[in-house]
Amino acid sequence: MLKFYWYPKCSTCRKAKAWLDQENISYEAIDLIQATPQAAEFEKWLSTSQLPVRRFFNTSGMKYRELGLKDKMTELSIQAASELLASDGMLVKRPMLINNDQFVVNGFKESTYEESRASFS
Image (tube, rainbow, N blue to C red):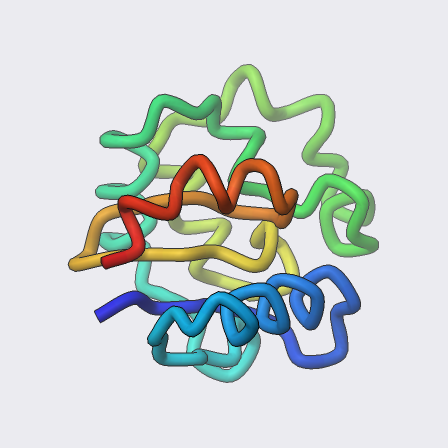
């Protein structure tokens, strides 16, 4: 089952949800703030994705700026990044799609969702 981690107050998340609904793609919606994934899950996704660690962080968020993470990104290990991400859902780039415990995509661009569509089922 496709898991859609989102923050209901986020306009980008609402656009992604609307796209999934319009395309009749089944998913389980999970509030990223109320049910933030565990560090072990983030560690797996960070390790298996082709993305740099920075791409898992909400770099425009207040929490990211408060913690001064921009200057620390290059030093962060996957384990340290995973623990940070699991500590506060507001640090996570959203929305995030996970299929069968495998990271698929985060953020929302319609073209990226179209390209990743085969991974949704």
